[in-house]
Image (tube, rainbow, N blue to C red):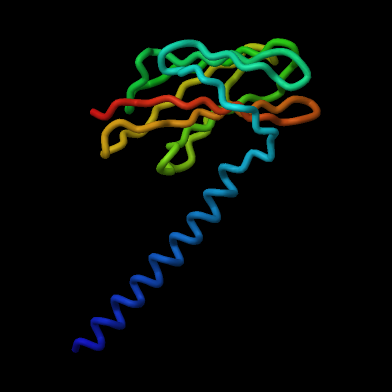
Length: 154
């Protein structure tokens, strides 16, 4: 009886380990941008609009509203790009210290101004640091602009 229980627990542990490895591999593939990663600015998009210079000139401005940013609240996202024309803009939300799953809405726009909506899931551990990575695709390249901010727990 004890041996059978140990076998069942071993099988469950191996299945969980396999699921974790598969999940990690898929997560890395989904979150991969293949983009030039820009340095993270010191501003906080949950408090203010954030601007970051772009490679080869121009700038990107990120605005998230309402402020302060809260979990389970519909967020309005605005991205403005000056100095180059973007074909596609996405914003990838994930936890800095804990992966929160795939959450990368594509913003709609005209090459210079893009907008969309997103909702952050709630973190049961309290205050959480989030990373909002704006992924911009132009005719010739992709770049990713990371922004960090904190969201208070409920």
